[in-house]
Image (cartoon, rainbow, N blue to C red; front, top):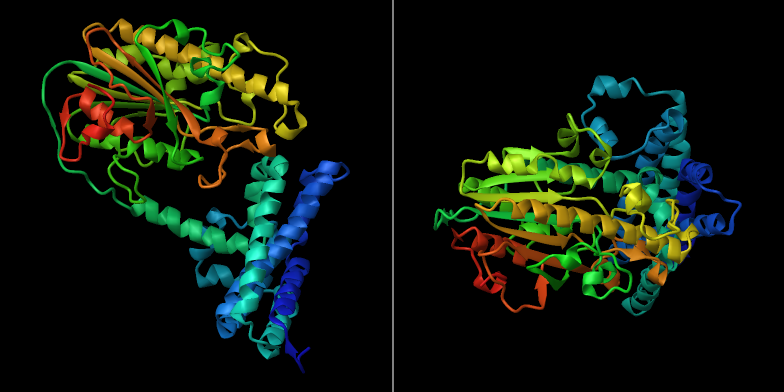
Length: 506
């Protein structure tokens, strides 16, 4: 091959195959350990992983070498050298190349690093690194024309997309094992996780872009409670016409209004950010709780979940904080978010109070563990984390029971707010995103919003108002961004960034 020009497609396929053979023993050792490979589903996952790994690596290399064969050779040579060193540590010390490990590597000094040098390491570097690099440097690769590149590149991309969607039933297993799989796939383990390490480091040091100062317009005692749902999809709420009675308590509540809404993302971190920011932006603007807290509103955040942007307030309570001194079954579920809430509100010395309750009630895959036994209204239920192994009926029943429990929590919250008669109160419930329950062979969430099915995007938006407080505009469809401006309006906060068009109250 070194004596003749090599076709670019043939070269990237060979390079991808060598990368696969040399550097993925530990990857597939883990796969065979964590997977029942004697079943049809297990075989399908293994075959899919092999095909995906070979094709995806060749696809990326094909793009790089088409743009520049010189750059392609440099990149591929570096990857083989680093692969050889990394796989030595993976095979010898059984490390996982995750962001924490990347941090350890980047913070290692020379004395620590030099202690790892050994004859075996040199063998890895020579046999798996230097020898392939010599081949990479010496081989002559023919130039690819754009006329050939475009259809090949497009068809390969389409094949990868179809492969991903065709394996929707296997996503649960892959998602469950993604930390290990992602830490053992070469070269993506260290490429991606190095990027994640620096991104996380950047986020820690990143400051919010402060919004213009605001001021409180009146001394009326006002209380706004925002409940952020987890994976609550709209079509499974009987308030929206679902045939199963999942909202037996909320259906009886007066002054409760339901709106249709669509999430702007299909995963928690982006969904929560959308709910709390004043406009859809990739930038980290000051989020609602931070903004209100800085402008003299008493803010309380209680959570059994995670994924929110940095919250800079005094009263931030995680589940472990709420669990202190808590007794009884409710302490194990989202009902704990209500524990002591009324007392905390009454202890406030400010006229304007904003409360956020970030729930986890409908988080999969173990839906059946998210609610107390007495809320198992629908049976049989799925009890496996391998959602594809459950019947559609059992899976949906387990999920619907989480909606029944959500109904109970929200109705209890509203009853508590009714007792605080000195406050004009509102409760807003909106989910971070929806959820797939086997439709199109998809489970849970996380599909990019541009391709996501409606089940992962269509969410409930519920609003309750106390007697004598506000009235609602005649909206039918809202967005997550309506939250920010509506809370400003309800609490009578005057701000230069307030948008009346995004306010739901009259």
